[in-house]
Image (cartoon, rainbow, N blue to C red):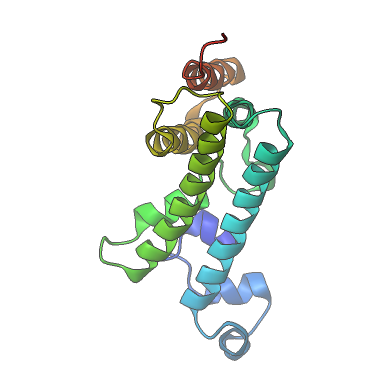
Length: 183
């Protein structure tokens, strides 16, 4: 995962995979069938972890909007300490692939799954009265997902942790501003 995340799918060679996996080419093909199949498994694993973490946060927070706001605030703590980049592996992979590549559809499906998770949380928030009836959960979920990915990219370049924290807090507050007024 770290190799694909760092170098990208296109730039990762079989020699790179051999070194990281400590396997010979024949063994790699026997185990994974192809570089693309291994990449797909890697993307599945990455996306499953990301989705599970977000789902757990949503399930364990007092409200869905609280969870999404907390997720944005938590992004201020991003550092590549346990990963090769703060940027999302799905987005990095999507950006490197040509428009007509079949792998793009595969990655987009994972991004859609995350967006759907956020939209479903927002639908629940609307049903529970946390969001006003005119809030469009699908539109708001796209905005939140854009914030998440943008913050992950920003974390790559931001050297001042306080500025990053302020940015995350501002975006979280913006999401909070769409909540239904207390009656």
